[in-house]
Length: 199
Image (cartoon, rainbow, N blue to C red; front, side, top):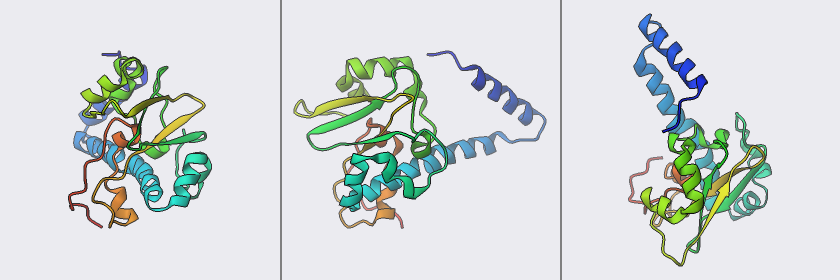
């Protein structure tokens, strides 16, 4: 396990002090973090992916120049100044890592998961991608080519996951609800649609 960053220790100390003085409730902090992690950031990316699934012209533009293609969305936040989109297909599976630190497109994926910042993931996904993916629940046949993309301060990546089977009749908004943060990093394959999505 890596040592916490000084900023994280400072933030935790301030949070503890505010809770202790009754100025903040721990549940409120957890709710804000959960909302940001599950909806705000990753839902931006999910909207992009859903549009790519239903609009072939946008999908092509995204693959050619993702930075320019997402401009109409006017996402707030940074780390998408040089965005590259890669597409998972039945023949190719893409996964993203930052081997140096934790470079990540915050504006479209929200906060990076803790495991993304861990040295174990950062080193192993490059050396033994199939094994790491399998440990994370993604089992790929030997016929599937695995490509690992290394994010950096200059370039960030977005994986366009394969559209779930059975979702052909869904609209863009419903499709966005099926997309997860981990699928846009490439460490999850979206399951077949089971009819539980709501407008």
